[in-house]
Length: 127
Image (cartoon, rainbow, N blue to C red; front, top):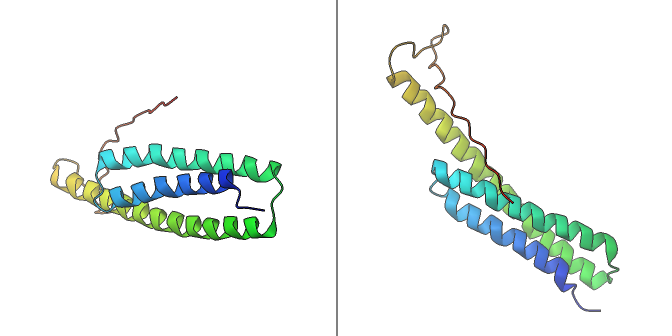
């Protein structure tokens, strides 16, 4: 029995989105982070398709081994993206603290730390 193409395509699609996110996060920018959110949603959609495919199709041991190998790579990709997202978050949180400290006025908390900058809320709808 040959490799199940649909399952592997779903995994590879998710990995492709994660590769794009990784390359963007090497130089994080606020707009980049927003763009990455959409790509993460597309990767999650590919994984939902994979889950459905795995539930409905019988596979040989060879096919299962191929899927497991590809899923192992996907897991590593997710770990890398998670690390980059955490680093970008720490960077922007630190930058926010610096900006709050420079802003003047009530820029410090009662404990001596920088006060938080006012948050700007956004809603992103897709579909």
